[in-house]
Image (cartoon, rainbow, N blue to C red; front, side, top):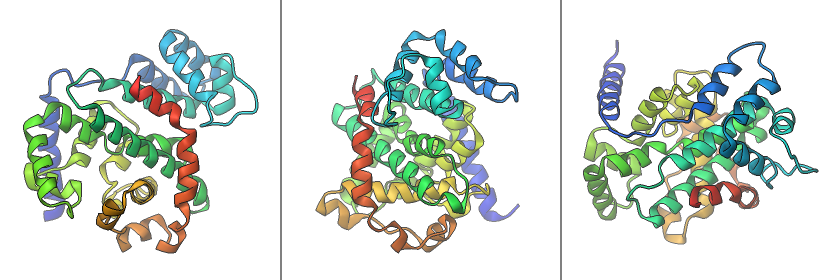
Length: 298
């Protein structure tokens, strides 16, 4: 085992212990676990997924609302969960359930409305950016756009865990951020805690038994070149994270955004010029996903 691998493994074990010791840590609803289990079967059908959703009226309503929103832009209104599953696909429904679930898991905590809104707006923009990149560079690696959206939406979920359940560290991180605004968030977290939100998100993904591709993207969204998976999803999330920051940053914030590394661009299979001009497109696509934002604020 190399020194680098040993260090990573030590951090991983430490973070898993920290996360596992958190009381009242949110978990995905049973409906997501059941759908994931069904989709692991080769004989899974749209009816199987629809039957599971029928047991959760609240989630069924959210799925229908999202399916009929501008996010999908369907030509006609869908009035049944079964229709939704058939038209957008079983994997897409699974990702919608996961996304909708997570946006409701951290409600009722002491976080300020301003922090939560800023967090979810960036997460949503990254999700939409990931969806765009998955479509734009589909020929360079088959990544399902809906999976890319969910991975982008969840990429910073470790930040919510830190903010909600590790509040002493969170206060130190905020103070350090004000002192050194030129540092990336994860660099400040490393200084304060010895690990960062991507490590926390990785441990959470393990607790939730999320698919390996999603967990991998959360873990390596700041350093996709270190990902052991062949899938380019972590690189897509890294690129989308950069584009989302660049698109919605103020003039001051824009000057502090670090460009993508050569290694990240190489893993994504593009050069910097390929990402230019995506700001306007992301603005348009983000507006179509406001239903998700309303869900987070409800």
